[in-house]
Image 1 (tube, rainbow, N blue to C red):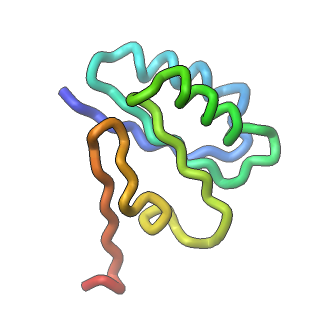
Image 2 (image 1 turned 180 degrees about the vertical axis):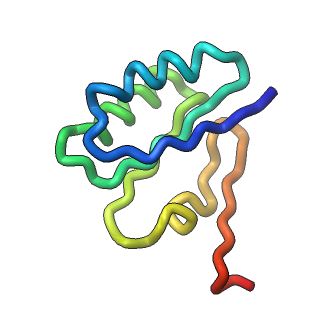
Image 3 (image 1 turned 30 degrees about the vertical axis):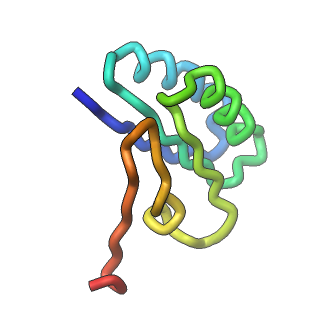
Length: 90
């Protein structure tokens, strides 16, 4: 089974390692961490975890009001391509 767990984060530095351990304990599970410019260093920690778990964790750093869909569009997470659609696209 291939599962992508999308995790929006803001000031989750203490919780992120616990979540990563829990999710990646399952074969076929991957994570996409979407950090909203956390001032506590969550984004930097997410990058470190992504390097440690290459191919299983990807990180998006949101810096503006783009919305999750537009921020994720065109990304590849361990072989899973991400696409986004909005009502503006219809």
